[in-house]
Image (tube, rainbow, N blue to C red; front, side):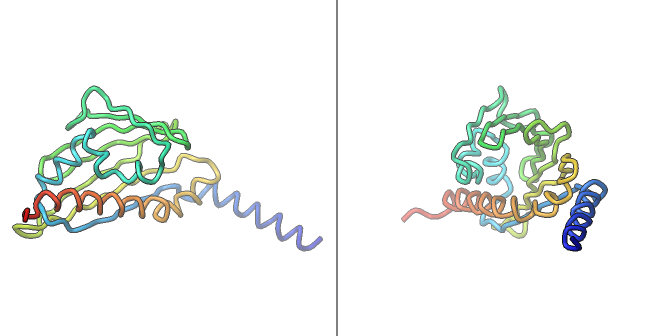
Length: 177
């Protein structure tokens, strides 16, 4: 009987924590690429180019992407469906050689997460690319727990995507022999 009481109070504590603790998350990854911000921007700023590097197509075979009427720059959009419901994104900033920023909605979320890729010139031949996403889980009770594991869920996909961008940019800048 004592064990049942302990389990009961533990479950109550988990519930209360899930209701009242923050649901905010932020995931960031970066990579150094032998190439310019302009070269990187050509891949990241055009949604029609995303299949060349996007980790989501590799990690989730059921993804079906629909491009919007505009695929480049501010106002570019796409939606997708997959086994977990899908979502949509909309470019809200596009600075050639410097960054893209987009709103992204997962499932039927009312408020978007904000994602960005920024390019920092390190020297004449190298650029550091930072990819980040932040938002609120918008999931009562379990949102806090989901926010806690977002880095582990999304981080490896960001790493794969950044490595794919690196491969694409660097293959274009390698001398042919």
